[in-house]
Length: 247
Length: 247
DNA sequence: TTGGTTGTTATGTATATACATATTGCAGCG
DNA sequence: CGCTGCAATATGTATATACATAACAACCAA
Image 1 (cartoon, rainbow over the protein chains, first blue to last red):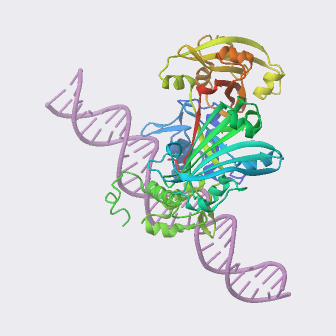
Image 2: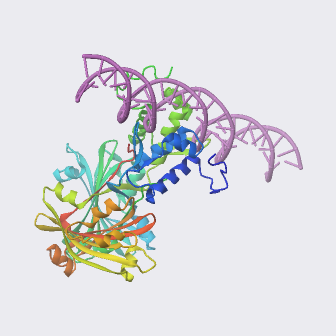
Image 3: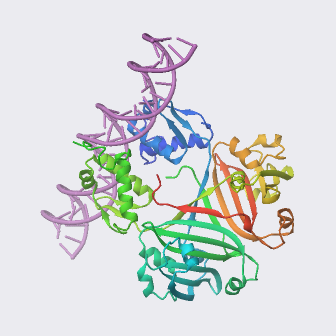
């Protein structure tokens, strides 16, 4: 009955499963089905879209995982009320950001030290045992102006190859990404006043506001690196998006 | 044949589908299967886990959607190299944040104005036509100290009920969340120096660094509100996590 | 050598079916 | 009256199957 005219309505080449998904999301997002509303039972949707329960089930499960609906056995599926706002923050490579501004990018090492991890290093990395670490300081340039200061600690236990690398004009970020297979990470974002040293390298006034992004990275459960990016306030805005129904 | 030894292996009450998912993610995340590695064909995994192709397919599709693998017809599925680092940023309610610090929370209205949207308002909301807007300024307190300044514009076309509300001691954030069904939002995070007015209400020195979080919200494709939160630098750190294989 | 046809392969999507499991309502019994 | 247990119901998970589609290889013919 439904969808006897499959390809004349939208004309799109989307799969049925995606059509159901889009349909229902739209109704929820538009407010047509408000929070608390019981959406049709699977067997009803099965009739509406003239398809099998498996297809409907797959779509509904996806909606449930996305947090749009809540499923209760024996009762049905219900529109959830929006709660923990979560937004997706895109963490770009600094080179990409600079080049997006139409400026030439350059990285320059400021200092490089190899040492047995002291208490500070271990705290940053989240290590228990004192092991060899590589401590790097570098500057990212946009054109001739310094764009961002990078302070980094790398665990040489996790990435022994780093000991062979000078990082004179190779930014450690992309270098690590290319070598360490898969990461989990934690970011901390805050504002600070530039201290004397930071102000000097970033070519700004002491005490002027900076955006600081700190990242701790693990791979295979092992601490890999801790990095702190310091941007002069005008240089950088982070953008995060919240779209409940992603593809 | 299948599942004859269901409960003796892991002992866990997880579904097979989840077990496959966890298994493969772990191998990828641990580096055992590096980027570019071809993971076993569906029919091989079918044998390995002694289950149907549908189950394997579902798990692999999920991994593909999570970005861990890339699927190519005729060639197989391959471990992707990590690329666009995306992190999930939890946007908490300010009341929750303050109370997490063990301090009593209070909201206080500073000003309230209703007007035909001027150019600035329309730019913030992303409106084309001049329509009635509600402009609010308020302070969030942690104990006796100001914690965060809020500047907000609400489209009265999208939320007419807001005209009836004084927002004297009700924070407009939660009020809106309870009333406007489902949102999409865009956040911008940056650091600025406190201007005179901001410094005065936040009880900090002029020019001292602040973390600014701006949020634009749409519901059903229509602009709803724009809000700017200004935190004194010491008051706030945003935390974002990246975990490639979520539940 | 070039160009198209054909076949193989692995994934993509959908189906019908089966059984498990959680929850609710109701009937019946103490 | 209240508790217990059974039946009904909706979702959860898995199966076997079928056909579509994209990509590649190999072959054959102009």
